[in-house]
Image (cartoon, rainbow, N blue to C red; front, side):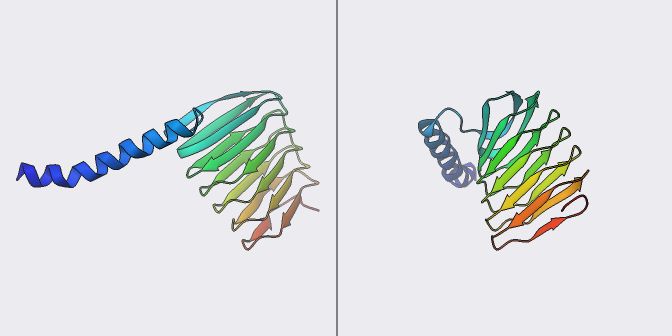
Length: 155
């Protein structure tokens, strides 16, 4: 009985080792599981792996990049952040300071909460894109096959 169980688990274990090795060879920014941290103002922070990634900008003007097969959650309390999304997972941006820009070519859902106003959301992938809330002056540009929506504050 133990022998059969071992034979069922062995292929999964080999797959995980192969996946981890492949990600390690592609670069040190790749991850499996959950990742969180802070991003210094004026720098680029990547979320590119398999799992969930949470990054918070220390100030304003951070550049976030979301890739891989996970979900990305970015916080930009100071505003003026830019996000590039190429992931297969979901993207959520909180831009309390306003003036944030999102360019999404990914396949997951994109939700922007723009408390400070004047945010731009460009969707050219298959994503469902939404500005959930905006003080005023927000724009949604949808050129992909997904849907775009602005709940409030859009021109």
